[in-house]
Length: 199
Length: 199
Figure (cartoon, each protein chain N blue to C red):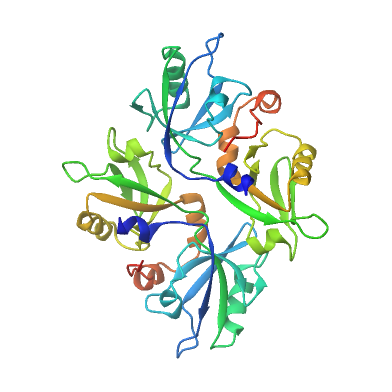
């Protein structure tokens, strides 16, 4: 199943090397949470997107310097001050996220309601109920494709066009709300990377 | 590494069949969170412990009935009313937990401070810092052995006796505090299953 492979959360560590674009940007934002630094935004078509940096990845190191205890501003400043041709990030794959795979029923429903990208209700005796999908979670990816900032209608469209099996990537609202705090809605809605990851 | 295998969080679904003991108990408690039902207590030496039910497992079904949307009381009542010789649980492996593996340095430290079983600080340039261990998390298992309710000194002892590599299982305080709400401290301290899981 390709959606499952695209979405797969490994919690593993990888190294990514980025170059700044012509404007001197790499196209990501970070947010400090509980003494860790996390990717809170990846811009569409930016070096970060091309380097497959994902929303929710934890930045362990910037150019071999540990990020533990850094503020968001400090980490952003380290990125800005990096040499344009070589920024090396050590990333841990999305620690606060997990995937859940659901099956459409004969009416093509999987059995949950969401509003503003957040899961608000589970329908009885559906795939969502059987698999233990939870409310109070944000819907981050469908089949591994980031849907943050998309309209609910667009997300429904993506689910409708997927096969009988759908893999969702979710994160507790509690963490999500912190990640998105004081992020401009226009940025998330207009410029978040929503490309389909290669596997 | 045996500790890593003992601790490994798969998020997979398994079926467990339990029988009540002579007192008519199976030795577990559950807590409803976000329309899901979770194991909040496993008693030492009880049928639940012998069936390898773990703290944090999500109960998807009790005797083929979906638990989605059940209150804690409703789920406990379903368990109590079950036939003593055959209680079938469908469990999802610890959805709110993850593991992190640390290496002891030459002074046998991994680099974090905890208090009352909760991670409160990360030391600079240590294994905990390099690996992105976070504060605001509860320490649930060391090398896959449940340590909830143990004194900090006892947990330190377990870590000291482990090898150079230590795998920790953690959960955000936010979820942990909800799981433990209104649970008697004496129950957790005195009767929680702390046995070492077989692999």
